[in-house]
Each structure stands twice: as C-alpha cells, then as structure tokens.
Length: 105
Image (spheres, rainbow, N blue to C red):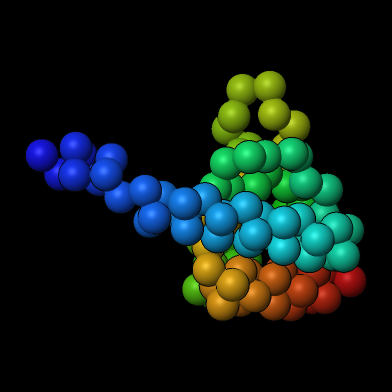
C-alpha cells in the first residue's frame, strides 16, 4: 500500500529528481576544482578517483562515509562512491575532502 501511495507523489518525485540533478552538478564542479576525476553518472551518487590511499578511513573520523570501490571487479584501485545529498551535506563532504587532500601534500 505504501509503494502504491508513493507512486502518486508526483510533486515529491519531481523535487527529488531536481535536487539530485542540481547537487550532482555542484559536486562534479567541486570535484573538478579539487582535481578528483569523476566518472559520469545520472544516479544519486558519484564515482570518483582519489590520489589518497585509504580515503574512506581518513574521512570517517570527520563524519563522512564513502563507499570504497576497491572490491569492485574490474575497477582500478582508488575509486570511491559518494552519495549526492543536500547542499549543506555536500559542502561538508567537499570541506572534508579539502582537509584530507591538504594533509596529504
């Protein structure tokens, strides 16, 4: 019943799609600024490659959870997956990435 009711929520669905599209674009721009290559995506997450080894573990104490893709078959080492979230959460992700990248210099 909940699934059928959710199908009728066209406004919510449209707003969610708009938010994900807008925030995915924001994240792609920020990742490019940080020189972190992004693999194209239309989903609510972004694949990117990091020069920092064990990035997931370094971001966790900062309250950021990433999905390491090191165990994906055929995926080269160093790729991670980040969820597309709200602007505030995405800004926190970018700030944490900047902090870790700066520490690695």
